[in-house]
Length: 326
Image 1 (cartoon, rainbow, N blue to C red):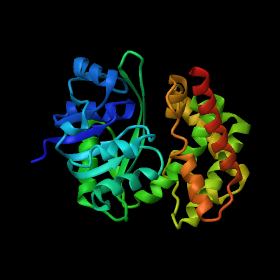
Image 2: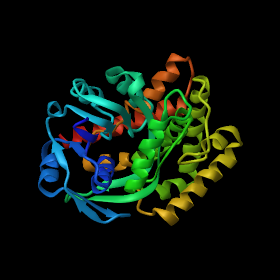
Image 3: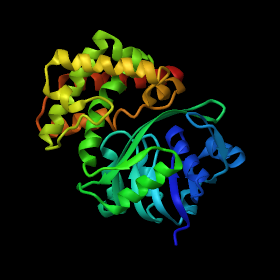
């Protein structure tokens, strides 16, 4: 029998939301955290506010070597440093592993350490913010989708989705997880670039005509990369990605602004995690996301000029911000 039901790597907003709900539901949860965050969790547990209101104690491990086994490892850290963090867990035994990080690189990193057979694909249309006092503001609870990397239905994906959903974090299994991960990743690239450049809440840049035009063009460039990789796209994402990539540009812009109106109605304070990182002085996960897409495009001989320009711009913003803070 595994030591824990779930090990959550990363105790930021998303890791804390998942860990808190699972612990409240009675599952054996280990939060892998460091420094002041680990000390806070050990002292006060996890407090969730917003869409749910509760505090729950959790077992917190600041040394990865202390973890021997868990039924599932959920990676919820920011993407920088993921490879090194997973390497510290190579000794542990996990039934399955999955990551709710941004971008497709996460699955490759998990497979390199634990083997592809133990990796499930996952994506989260779920949001929160870690507050200065240590509480987590739960702001968006749409869906966590889980599935086999090679497609098809599986009982282990369905069982995990049922467990999360019963705990209070909406989740479902999918037989087309690669399609859905890329269908989220394509617009997320645009969200990140616009959030970092405008420093605005999400609905504002989605509703702005010039920002919406740039975002639509970025999605369409990313769609060409997905097609070159042989990956189908879907409209079941944070934007209707397949339609944006296949129709007229003016219709794509209209879909982006319509999404902005919905964010304004349902989540007016929503800020992308990249903007939260920027304002908190944390490194941006640009190399592992936008940079990853650029690298794949170059390998295929595909020219994506807007993506290249936005990637260099976000890198420059991140570097100059941190240099100014030094």
